[in-house]
Image (cartoon, rainbow, N blue to C red; front, top):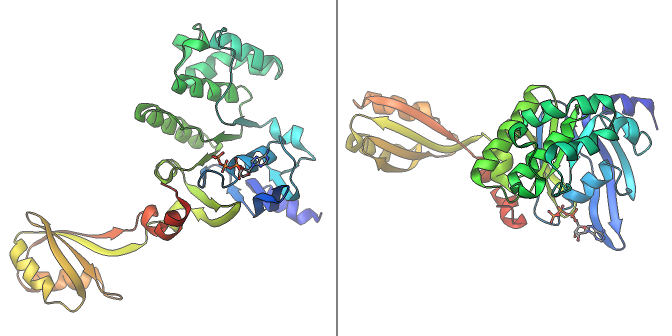
Length: 315
Ligand code: ATP
């Protein structure tokens, strides 16, 4: 392997090159070139069966790749898995604990294999996920959301640079999802990288800075969320003093494709291709309409990927 590729890989939390996993004739992960920058929340988004869990399992050394290369925090894996994984915390599917033991006892067992520094982090980890007051309760009394948070506390025992969470919000109620999102963002604020796999577009859009969309083992789109969404949709909302006059003015403009009144003193119109919102603004003012607010509307990620998502079954 050429050394330059290793150097480039160290810039990323995760980098894969042509990563492939076959089960017999079935290709679960198909030539994936994944690039996850450091210090972001990254969404690995795809429908069930797209190969998300398989990719995560390969990264963590739980299953072997059929082909390709993987780098975790700059270390080539599986060759240097031990070094890389010492800085990684992961939850695959639902975190498992001994239900008859308390949260504290469960973390003590987990810390025992990680060393004294991990043991010293138990109280702060429990505090961090909001479970310190319940740390002496048996885990069997915990809700799913509490068990997920305890899973995160266990990840924090080795102060990870990278957290990998497979479908972490599955089964959580809206309050649990909010808490989880807040936790993830706080980890990113500390400079950690958080990778989340999910089949829910909305969840990823609200939580992540960068994403890959994966379908049938292949990446179909990847990049920073702000670059992938947020283009001008062609629609403009405007607030005016006189909606009847504004309707009349906009309706006769060649630059405006369609226009409707959406609320008292508020209209929405579509610009024809190449036309600018400022042209409509100027014409309204020229015609004596007071323009209180004019907002060109951005495309949501959902709109941007409508064609992909409708084919893939991502909700
Ligand atoms: P889900 O969210 O449903 O788990 P996923 O995107 O994580 O979906 P994977 O679990 O990685 O998808 O599965 C990808 C494909 O590989 C699926 O078609 C699955 O049936 C297949 N697969 C996964 N593990 C195995 C295995 N051990 N043996 C054979 N096929 C497998």
